[in-house]
Picture 1: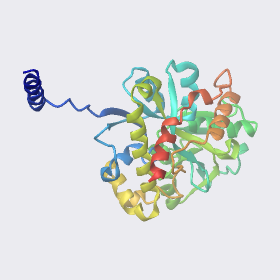
Picture 2: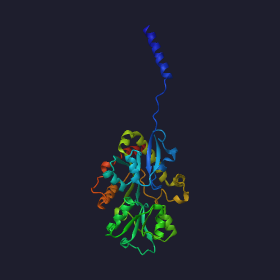
Picture 3: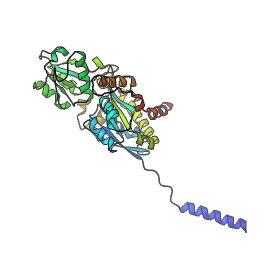
Picture 4: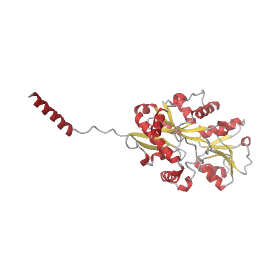
Length: 337
């Protein structure tokens, strides 16, 4: 009798299991990703070629959100409206000391002028009579924004030449796309030339390179991705998957045999003719490590420069604000394959 009841109970359990709904599948983690001017900030482009991404749409998705400046992106991070965002070395120093946000550097976005690659150049008119930094005394100099990496790179080089801000020269803000017009119309005496605008200006002629950030700063770890620490802790698996796909796509974009297709993807995303982006992902573009590993030695030196300029009142040891464990795990996965 007992065996018969046991058989009936077992059958009932099987029947209930058969009609019970399967456990709900967890929704992919939506990563709100802050980015800036393309293709200098490459991150949103890497998630356009989804057929090479192993985890996209499964463990995570990406919602790319454009910000004109990293300072604005930091405000969104503080309000928890962003999870991961691009940041310049200069903004990182401010975020650490004044931002009130618990952030961690998680991967590299790009370096200026490293390993034979092109970075920004400070440009003047060929017939301006300006042939050295010392000739900038009494002149009007353009930067994209006060407090930007461009601004501090300019100040570092001028300080080395013995020129003092507000005393020996005037700095004004000009949007990067408007720099060339401001120079040619002689509203300013010096501007920043970044790809592709640098190459467009030089093709027209009448301009020359005067100096570059690394003349005083060495290699510049110009752009990084940072993430909120709480987001990292709550979503470790999804972040590692995100970075595995990130590095997979980055290596694909940097592979010369994929150059034309990569430029096409960028052109479509940016709604620009491919012919204007031929420099992208080559030595004429910013340097990007194929594992997206930041140069922490350069980053520390760059933060020291911000301190030396008097922008921040205390030196920063960057190591506590970096967590590369997510990236290292992602790269190990890829290389095992």
